[in-house]
Length: 233
Ligand SMILES: *Cc1c(COP(=O)(O)O)cnc(C)c1O
Image (cartoon, rainbow, N blue to C red; front, side, top):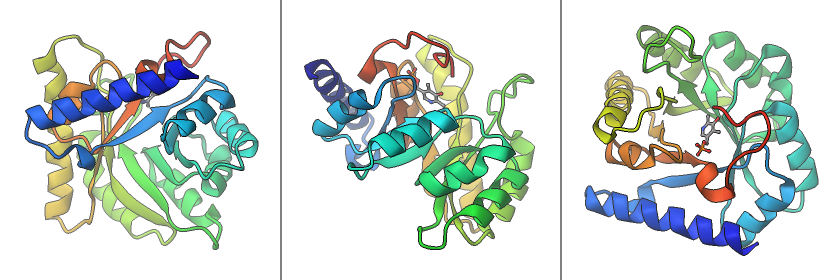
């Protein structure tokens, strides 16, 4: 469908212009197309327009889309909350998970990762805005959890992810992203080989790129508004 192709091109151009304006190489920023709630055919359309990495929030939806799209070597990213009784599906299907927030989940993913698959790439989801209600690791707990996960054999710890509280002011949007970047640098200084900042969605992507995002997770700006539950992050 041309609408998805055109929207993708618009998002790519936006990434390039924001990156260049702040002196970054656009090639360092990967676009993750968040396809949750959209049908497999929308992924085919985006694939035809050159998109290779797709993000899903719901375990069953990821599994059924993997099945339907077996003919496409999609790079699947799981970005939603994960319960421990569903880890096997993610271990067997995903290339990345961005939403790990406790050791038990990581241990299960490592144990359940099939031997013939490469290690699962992992980002820790950080509760960077320090909201009581939000999921994610508390800032103070990030380093110990990161070191523990880095030792698990079938996982590769790649970095950090956040979903800050929504706000419309660019300067205010930047603050939590800057804090996440500092946290990543702290882990690097402690010897962890982490390279990924998964941050920025349709409404705050420019702020995230300005603060160093290496993966932006964009749904609405590519596929349009979501019409059924799952619309909220
Ligand atoms: C839905 C979702 C996105 C994409 O949000 P948009 O505002 O549609 O771009 C990104 N990250 C996570 C974790 C999400 O749940």
